[in-house]
Length: 322
Image (tube, rainbow, N blue to C red; front, side, top):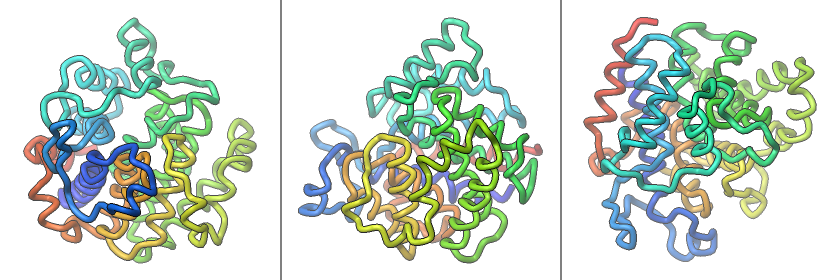
């Protein structure tokens, strides 16, 4: 795969993450008073500008396994998650930036105790945080190389669902991840209009999930708004930016639909407040892939921490044959 495509997705994701880290959990009102317009340091937590968090760490942990092995190995992916959790590998500063989400922590601890990796994720309705959505995007690079234009199949979507289930196994989280991956694949298929890529990706997701009994009700009950034709016109005040997986998916797609370039998209995401870095990471991965690596501001790329780590993992993946 073209290295610039891989870097566009990973840098797009990581820079969104890094823009949001210094103001994570701040309110929307605070962001309206003092909007983020560029990379910031976080003096209270002593993080330099350009520091990314677990959203990116777990994404590159996934990508590293794919690039090293050239195949899906759920145990190896979880081993990488353990290296991050126990040994601070795949981090921007050599130590964790964020507290580990409770659901992700429980899943990793379960794996360490001998659970099958795809059985580690929580299956309860309360287990629908954004912890799998925030790290799922690299799998589209592998799936597109292996399966091509059509990923709305049982074989490819099972892989997406299994990657989610490493930490989040409820149908709602799986569907959210599936929607994001199908949107990303439309971009890899050559979509020239981001709105059309989003529309077509969601349409394929609707067709896929509505035809499957174990997903149909979940899709119709929880993904109707983001699937609606006029979702882009939803007022900003009605877009929520919490850690709930539906909120993160909706907020990210809303930012993508209501922006014209990479910078506008990720800044809009950060300035929604609360889950500032995760919303911007999810939206940023899509925006980076669509607009391209060269559309990401050079100053933000230069400020990003641990670029050598990101580049090493991207290069290894790009050189792999699947």
